[in-house]
Picture 1: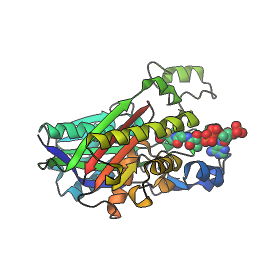
Picture 2 (picture 1 turned 120 degrees about the vertical axis):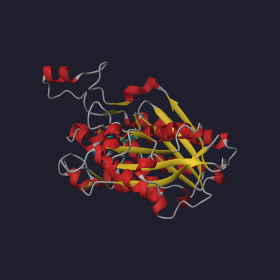
Picture 3 (picture 1 turned 180 degrees about the vertical axis):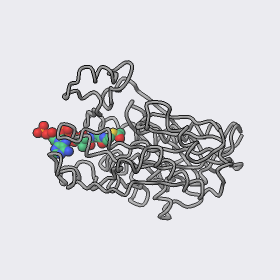
Picture 4 (picture 1 turned 135 degrees about the vertical axis):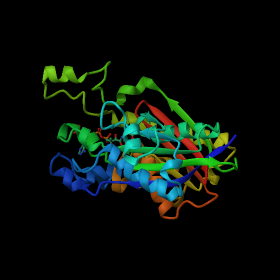
Length: 335
Ligand code: ACO
């Protein structure tokens, strides 16, 4: 039995900064409303033709591999989390394999929305624990900007999301007191529609329906979010899944050196921080700069926290996510 540990981290965000004031030029919104409710000051949007979900994932992955000290040939498996793939199929895992020139290793695509990275990490962790693979590339990348309703109709959603990518190399660790100690995954499909995009999908609205009807008011291909409902569930599930991880490892809240919550909304992160009595040094947030990048938000935040020296060897790091599905998940890591 082995453990897995993160040996390399990387992130990439597009250069194109979109401030709240920029959005206010095209949507009936304003900086004060956005900052007060979400904490977001700006986000990144790709420039078409310059970046895609795959290309951003590749850029983040290259940095993670380089920092791991491994070569591309050492990577045994890819797990790629996204809800915004470049194509309906195939998923971006195989495109990443090609772009990085990796061996013809397996590539698994994970969805699971904002919990996608923690789900992907959990999958990779199991492969390493069993001894099947030694080094796995876990990537999360999202282009949200192209799928948003950038009119006033979609303003409660479109001001929140941004584009970006993060990646981690997970490697075999022989010392089972280190690395990923446990992961905890949950779902509750009952609330699927409260945060969803219905089209395209075989059971929802298919592209041919939308084209045939040619209805400019059709909202089924834009994200729908019942914001207050999501908020109420998020704060409960975040708390539960953090506690679940602590209990499973016989840890106390005081043992947490760094909590990296999914960057859903600064108000949600602050609620959790207050509930657990954590100080500012124990929780990392960067939603102010990047908005909510769904699956990519945790690896982007984790990378930045590590780059800023906020995570040190021996630290207990908690990753926690909540998102559409609903899904929620946590990972407890001894760094
Ligand atoms: N700018 C200005 N006004 C807006 C905007 C906007 N961008 N969006 C909505 N409004 C208006 C509404 O039209 C409404 O106006 P009305 O009172 O005249 O009808 C008013 O603001 C209040 O609308 P609500 O939707 O009730 O806004 P609320 O106060 O609930 O805030 C928000 C919305 C920020 C989404 C909040 O519900 C929230 O924080 N929810 C948590 C969900 C979340 O963070 N999701 C992140 C993505 S999901 C995930 O990652 C898990």
